[in-house]
Amino acid sequence: MSHPLSLPLDGLSAIVTGAGRGLGRAEALELARLGASVVVNDYGQAGRDGSGEASAAPAQEVVEEIRAAGGRAVAHLGDVSDHEQARSLVELAVDTYGKLDILVNNAGILRDRMIFSMTEDEWDSVIRVHLKGHFNTTHFAAVHWRARSKESGGPVYGRVVNTSSEAFLAGSAGQPNYAAAKGGIVGLTTSTALALAKYGVTANAICPRARTRMTEDVFAGFQEPEDGRLDPLAPEHVSPLVGYLASPAAARVNGQLLVVHGGMVAIAERPRVAAKFDSAKETFTFDELDELLSPYYAGRPPNETFAAAEVLGLKRG
Image (cartoon, rainbow, N blue to C red; front, side, top):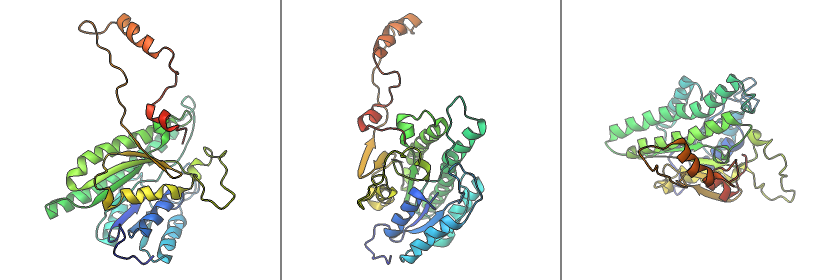
């Protein structure tokens, strides 16, 4: 992995969270292949629900894979849902490479349960790792970029790529905590995009569909190809988009949500107004609302979700 100067991420440094396995691993390898120096973050717990002893092995193995190919990488064993550990992650990137240019937030856990069965801890833990984890790293990266911009007197290079999910777009009955966290990540992304644009930083979110430890139940019925072809659900279908969004080529892409899987990228629009009703007098009455809204919803599927989800044929993921 000796990098010619023409590589799009040459001279840039990146953090990828949850990069010891699955999507994060594929993303870290792709960024390194494109020339970036990478901090590979992974808490290294064995269970996809966040259980088990923390281990440096998953992150270190990815680091060694990058180095063996000629790239630059260091490992960070830390829980991004912990504010101070997220600070140390950003500091490691800055101390090691002189600056941070790219942040890819991918770390997450699953604790699936129907809403009527979910415990407070199952709710809190998923929101903490996914949503708070995204906030923690983004906060410290933003502090770094803002300070650099003030010091230089102009914009700097910064890219944030966050990981949302089709569970937010199309709903997921057994994942109220996960779907809520992924929806929150979209809101965090658009807010970050607006706040940091003047400093030269972009922030975008992806909804990936991939066969990983996190989604083994979701895609259990989709068999991998037996003829040597790349699995349509392989994380390697997602990582090129992350590489693109992290690159100078994506300078005009900001505050966007993109669905990606199996050789397909779709740009999701923000929700649009489907219908509008005005009250006949100063304010609505119950009867007037009943006369206007009930006929509108009559005959529609009771679980109708975003039109974007229907157009794309998206299911739980």
